[in-house]
Image (cartoon, rainbow, N blue to C red; front, side, top):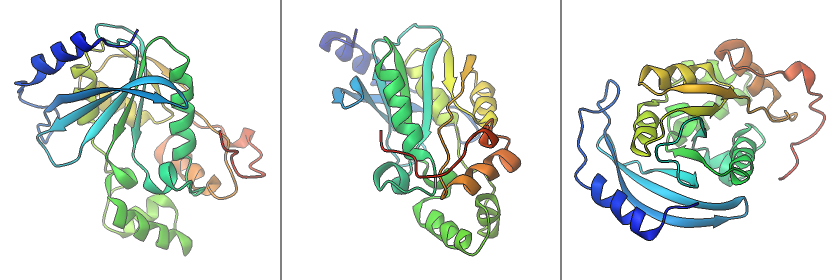
Length: 235
């Protein structure tokens, strides 16, 4: 069951004065500041908005049911991708991952998707477009990031860890193929009871992108079992 108006008021009141030493090297502290119903094409959700003390980025959780005090909650941690999520780019699998997660969560009693404002693996939108330009000349995603002076992975999952704590989720079944994400959340004290594989079919435009995830970033994907003969169909 979703949170009732009375429960929402209680959560907002209890979190209003929240202050803590913070998570991670940047001492990130988040606070729940708004909750609203979110009916969607993927199911009935509630959306939870978070303020944070690190920057002006506004992160949200899309929540199914009442996750407070629950164990083994299915959770997807998704970093924003304007080109994929909004514009339907086939260069990545971000939109497919986002929609597949929401479809899966919409069928469950409880679950959550954290939507983090960390464009381009944390390098920002403009630099991501610059990286795209370098990829057009033959570099892979990791090589492009390094050529621009970044690491292959610049995202910070301390914010996600604090968001999970703020939602009072006791342990998670993490929907991911990324071992770095698992390690980072566990480093910040999140109990991951299970990994739920989150693989989507490759297409001719993102196969090299996905391959670099496997060979250079250790993602747990099985591209050799996919034919990649055409674009991923719309869900």
